[in-house]
Length: 274
Ligand code: ATR
Image (tube, rainbow, N blue to C red; front, side, top):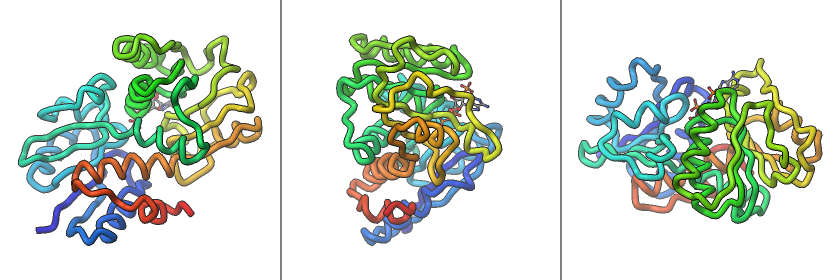
């Protein structure tokens, strides 16, 4: 019987996950399919109970990474600490939640810039589910300092509180989008984690004035050079959009579902990375 998988989110029309996973299934001759499901928050619980009958696993994207937690039977401790799940495994009706976002971002930064997270100072712009998961992951793998700035400051503080509990040796800072830390010129890696610039007409109010041109800048948004990345590039930073993060977080989810290693090359080609 064909195993079915998918991605649930709102909006989800832009998602390239189906192309990527279906190409990886085909390459390994696995009888499986992957589709996208546009589901509003008020319909999430009903959809998850349908998925329990229909899907072997699924990815979770904006805005459900947090809301889905209460609908699952078990959540991985790191994903629980970050309050963010992007991968669900349906184990005979028992729903298990994980986050592969931090791993995906780590691997993307290595692949794009040859930069390792260890001992680095990272500035996360945004404090949603993917940012939370990445912050917790980066702290666990030896980041030196993690600063989080966000429109809603309490969410940035929640992220740094998580880091302080799990990895107290990592220095932290939180603030609003215009309240950058006083040592921001020492930041090594900037990650744009907000969803604002998914909307073509909108631009995040963020200033690169005090940021060093030696820093690298990656955006979680994929398929385009966002205004955020354009500003970083104009300042002389090396930049990357989110395609590789998409591939690596997806590859890890794929392995969790199938116990097989997908071809990274096949997945990259499917999302248009040369
Ligand atoms: P994901 O799960 O992909 O991380 P999310 O949890 O919905 O997505 O988080 C979206 C992020 O984009 C948050 O940092 C959010 O800021 P708030 O915490 O203040 O909501 C940010 N974001 C969304 N719309 C925004 C806007 N208009 N201006 C600034 N930030 C915005």
